[in-house]
Image 1 (cartoon, rainbow, N blue to C red):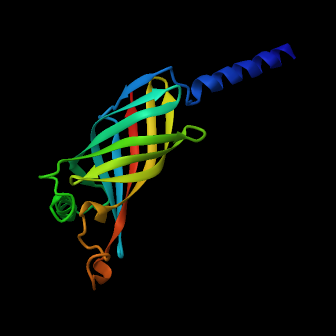
Image 2: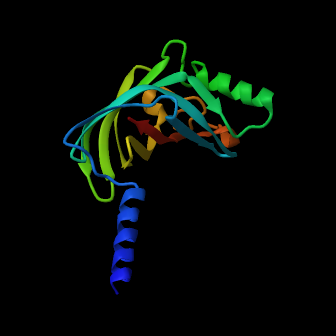
Image 3: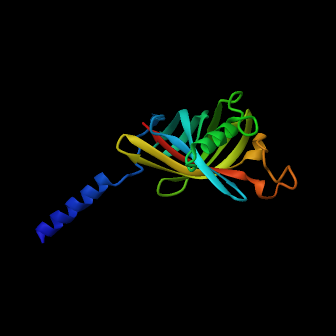
Length: 199
């Protein structure tokens, strides 16, 4: 019995050590690991969808005993890449179009930014986040869920943000502004999946 008891204790201790947790120090000032962090985008149209990645240029979070006090990150819009098209010529053409003035105008607006204004703690590392996102010099408020977990000295932040591109003067192919587009219609909403690592 004593041996079984010791075995159960050992298993419990190992599970605590090996399982990612949400325990944080009194105050952590965390910087974004730009090498490992990225955003994954998904845009849909009547005839299908395209996806890809965007690099995160910088960012930081302040966490006090598991509560998000503040947080922000800057996105390098010139790094927009498509990942679902195999044809190199079509892939390059789409990437160039997304960077043009029809879409995100990266020459004039090379950066976008998101800043948390309020984070409400839920459970299991989940937070309801409100914040301001700036794209093409236009700032709008968004609200979405993120999950935050600590892995040793690294904190991983994940979540999905849905953005109405037309609010940022990105109207190309939008059925909300142009008539008779038919199967060339591109939906207004696009998704950004956060995959951020902080240290």
